[in-house]
Length: 154
Image (cartoon, rainbow, N blue to C red; front, side, top):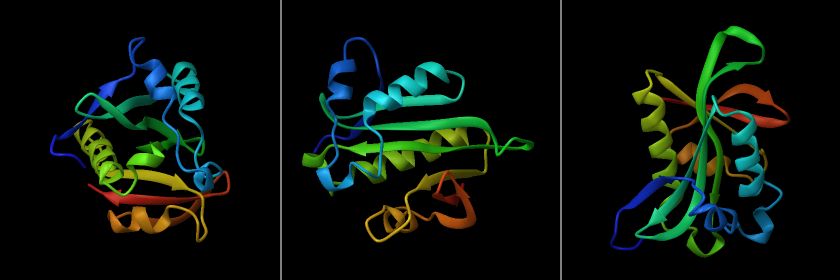
């Protein structure tokens, strides 16, 4: 990261193009949907989606989207929140922006009263499992859409 503190910003008409220009490395594109798809999902699920642009100063370096208070697996007694998407620009990976974004989502989930945050990710050696484990997420033993589910105690 640079000497400035990264921050999250709402995606607006003014920064929409910059958000859509965020692109992960070519070898990661099968692991995460592009930002434009995330923004479309946020549009059709406005009560659940919390999309944010990750900025370092005024420079867009990534995109993160949380899901908030979602009924899990059609069980009305199991309501969850957590990380839905994380896209760090290829040029800015390995600089701490992903860790910052995950912590920011965890803080937002905690602020809303939850004691656990969740993430789903593609399993396998090329997936982000080790990254999430390094941040304290533990696999739950569940899967969702072929993805591994992990939780983080808040």
